[in-house]
Image 1 (tube, each protein chain N blue to C red):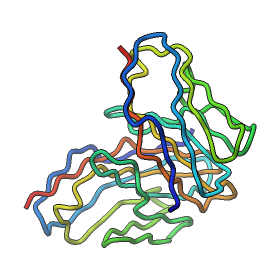
Image 2 (image 1 turned 45 degrees about the vertical axis):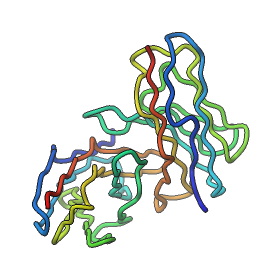
Image 3 (image 1 turned 60 degrees about the vertical axis):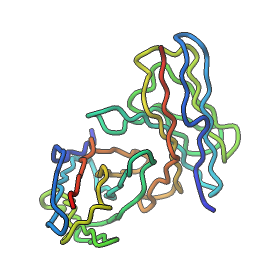
Length: 114
Length: 110
């Protein structure tokens, strides 16, 4: 089954404790992206990657890191989480070329930073 | 920059009512346009899309037409069901840039 998976689905942590949210897709997509969803703000893009070893900042990259060492995986790293990073996070993937392709979304990771 | 504006919710309708959710966009080129739906506790799912002016996307009774002259992509359904209750997001893609609207929550009452 074609899908984007994220782990963990729920995470409660404390300020400053490094964490990683994993994302994996099995569709051989070149493009992968991370979003955060906050009430009234919709989805805001954190980082995206057009292919292996190619990453770029989205609209709200501060406080986050990503890496793309393999095509299928795109982990999101919070080196020193803060309470304002409490949010619902979505990973997404897409074929890269052209304008035609939609994104496929993972189920989301709800993160709480206390 | 590129942006998407949607009508504010929540929208509450009775079953079998007609639905319209307005979406307008601002873009520096000619984007592809999408509607996504998010059911409670789930990720976003593509509902429909249109890739050029005057294209009509349709799926599950929902429709939207890409109107370049008004930069709009309004979502419509002739007769909503309780199962359509969800949050609906309008989005555009221009190259590698994806932009989403804030979402419109729809509640359909039996």
